[in-house]
Image 1 (cartoon, helix red, strand yellow):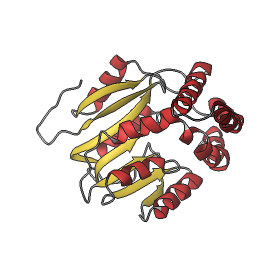
Image 2 (cartoon, rainbow, N blue to C red):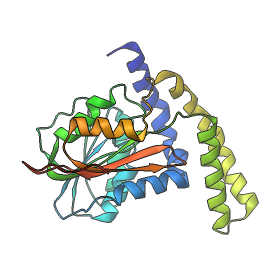
Image 3 (cartoon, helix red, strand yellow):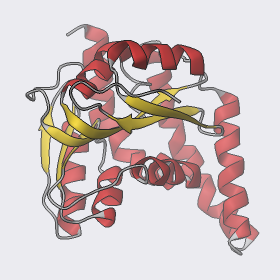
Length: 251
């Protein structure tokens, strides 16, 4: 592991994942993105579900609300994130498996999981191709997947768009304007601790819809759809891995 990777992992352990639940996790648009992605799945009792880059476990809560009778495994390279994800599941009466693991090298046999979710991870890994390939490898034939990819660079516009969306949503809910501002100020100030990630993390690959379609089709014969979340600037790729001998189409 390079020095830059070690530094990035330390940042996630000691900074990013300690403030995440008070900042990004509370953004209306990110919550909506989570709901949209998890809503693509058709969960059945006893499904095995893998969350690649589980973070602090907010997606896990969405999954367990959709079906409490699934088995969830969360992998991440941050011990802080894994601890928080495990604790959150316990708080709603469910136990999940959490494992420290590199998304580029998932330590599972081929065809282990019925469902695989990889949400907002590709922004932080250097080799999206490898992570995508691993996602399909560990998925069972006929299993469902949802993976997000960046469709634009992060910057001032993304931050301002998310802030405007949060303010608009809060005001539309009938909350007092003054209370909305008071609630946002500390979160904006805490948000400045995210700045180091823009320097430390690998330069992320930005995709056009055409480039993304070509990459997915190269790695798998799974049928898939591509949607774009315009404010969060992510492509949502979802579909089902083909059964043996079958080939599906991309949309």
